[in-house]
Image 1 (cartoon, one colour):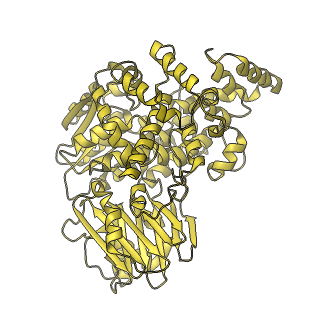
Image 2: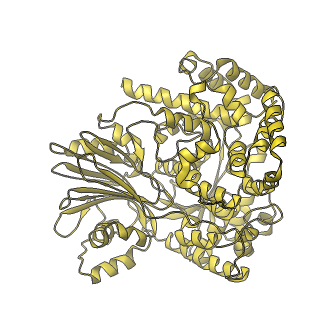
Image 3: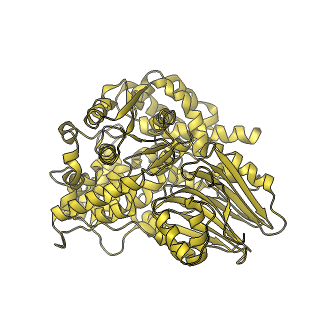
Length: 624
């Protein structure tokens, strides 16, 4: 696991000190080693967190004659099989690392070789004979990769701060990206906070051939979930197949030359991962859990039950409101506005685990692949609204628009009045329309209608008239997962030099999950039923009947208590209000409404706080 960076100049000679400065920004991603290559106009660099082949895995690594060089961030879990195949085809290896496999696979098969990789990765290859730079990112987007194509050359890095360290990246903000932030609470791929910088989307590769010629191609898409039972396999056969591929996905992610453990939240997904690890490990699994003093957010009890069942070496820690001292550090690590408040416990549990291990397995991906989120079941119930006559929709829309904002149900009525299920999903699961309408200045407001969706996310809207659950599961997996969940996990774990591996986001697990009909996923209004049918026997009964909690934090309580002054000072101060994003009057009303307990506005207030802290951090960097 590493951080990578580099650049190619149109004219002139690349300098090692520039790429070293880029990599110095991501020392936290790789404190164990560093390496650089500069030849002609191309420079590559890396910071290494040593996990496999500790003695000979130094990067950059080249082919036999030094004409093709690679820097790599991630893990290739089946690299030994690939190495044997490539050796049989005449390639000679000088190390035992998975990184060297990439350079020979590229020589042998070019971009087609990406289909053979099983792992998480972002890598860059400097191909001198072809005068080409080749970048690639893993299927789900577990590892990040930013780039900027400028008149003077091409720059890339694991984090946005790598590019900005060169001094070559224009500082113009991308206003469309900020509008998307107000809609989603994160900036989705391929956008970034800066107009000149883009993210390589998951499942894609890129070539830069000089002269500003950038080509992006896709090699993989998430498998589309089937809606109906096609009778191709029985539930029992499908469950057996899931157990087989899941246990294999866990097993190959336990390969490491350093101490390894697992995050254990007490939820179904992480519990299934720990159970599989314990069943395949001769030694007790190290598990790490996080809790809160507020009982409704505390899952430590359930984590302990699982830990006792499998006799894990269990560690736990409580998060208290003083964790807000971490916030400014978190903002610096994200590089962009990012409003998922569960970044706080993710950082804390990563920091805690990193005291004991260098690799941790997690349960990320289970909700997306097996319909675990409550919004999936809710979308099915709301399909009944498809038959609502157009005049009735018009009346509900008219009524919603005329109700005072303080009226409960105003946003719900607008959601119900939308003309199809996808629009209702957007209205009901992201920033509410009327809140944004009242809060934001008009130039920062994006509609959530079909024209907007088609314009911004056409690539992630399935053709024809797909089943609603199929469509929203695809959107969650292709857009929300890499834009929110995986960004949070990568930045917070790597901030603590900890590698996190996600067995549920193995492509073979994803293919098995996509092949099961919706009636197996959601039953009696509850999701993730198929995962429980396949793996539930491994879990204590208490976990099977517990309510879903999610990995949230008690922001609402904190914002009415110990963090109230911090929040008000930042959001009602002149610095934030003069930025021109929001209506000061409505923002103050939101704060007062939250204080009184009339509404829980903590999610939206947190997103504004993160935005302001990001601007302040950016301004401090420019001043230094």
